[in-house]
Length: 120
Length: 306
Image (cartoon, rainbow over all chains, first blue to last red; front, side, top):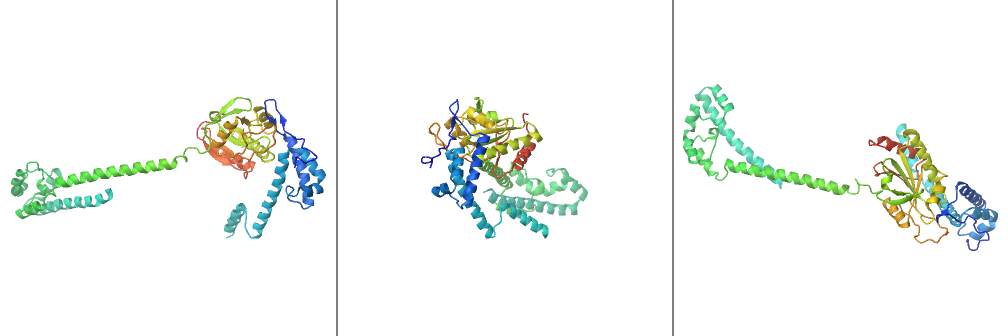
C-alpha cells in the first residue's frame, strides 16, 4: 500500500558511513510503537481486526491514526504489526475456544494437579 | 557360542572331579580300617602325589605297572584304580582322559574370555557411535565474524567465560529489542551474583544493513557488555548454520531496501570451553533466565576468566 499511500513513511533507512543502514533507536522505536497502539485502539473501536485485508475500511475509519503510524514506522514494520495484530487475535480466539472446552494451560495445569495432591 | 560351551564344560569338570572324589573317598574308607586315620589325614594335606607311605604303595601296586606303561602320565595315586574291573572301565571311556578334559576346559575358558572381550568391545563401540553428536555439541562450532569495533571474532574468542549468544537484526520491529532488554537484565543478574563471568554476544542475521558501525550505535541502547557481531552474508550464513538458527535474509538486497528478517529467537548459553549448554527461549522471564545461567556458572568446576 506504500505505493499508493498519500503519506510515504518518512522512517526510511538512514545510510551509515560504512555502508550500513542505521536502525531506529529506542526513542524512534517507542514513537513507532505509540503510533501503532493508537491506530490499533482506533481499529478496536470500529471492530476492525484485519487492516491488511480491509485497507479501505481501516483508512476510512482511522485516517489520522494510520497516517501517524505510517509516518513513525518503516513500511515493513507497519505491515508486520498489522499482520501480527491478526495473528494475535487468532491466537486469542483459539485460546478462548480451548478454555471453553475445558483445556488448561500447561503451567496452571501442573500447579492445579499439585494443589489437588496437596488437598488430598 | 560361549554360553553353549559353558554348561557342557562345567558338566565335564564336575564329572571328572566327582570321579576323583569317589576314588579318594573309597580309599579313605579302606585306609581307616587298615591304619591310623591321623597320618592318613596328614598325608592328604601334605601332598597327594607322595607315594612313600607303605599303605599307599601297597594299594597302588596293581596300577603302578600300568602307570609305568604310560610314561607321560602323572596320575596321582589318589585317583588310582583299585581293581582290574575299574581299570577296564577306565579304558572303556576311551579318549576322555583328564588331559582331554584339561584341554577342553582351557579351550572353553579361552573362548569364553575372547567372546566376553569381544562383546564388551562391541558394546563400547555401540555406545561411542550412539554418542556421536550427543557428546559433541550439535550447537556451536567454528565461525568467523567481525565485531562492532571492526576486529576479527571467532569461536575461540568465546572461550574463557560463559557466553550468551543471541541472533537478530537491528531493524527488528519488536521482538529483538524486547529480547535484548531481557538480555541486559540477565547480564546484570549474573554479574551481581558471580562477577564478570558472562560474555554476551549479539550476532546480526542482516549483514547487508548491519555494519559494525550500525551495530555499535544500536547496542548503546541496551547494555555496554553486549558485543555486536556481523560479517559477510556467507559468514553469517555459516554461523547461523552452526547454531542451528534459521534466518531468511535474501543474499542480494538492494541498498536502502526495507525488509524484515525472519529468524529463530533463542539465547544460546555456551560454557567456557565453547560447548553448548542450554537454549533459553522467549518464555523465560529475565529472572528465570538469570537463574538458569547462574546455576550453570555455579556448577562449572573449571576456570572462568574474570
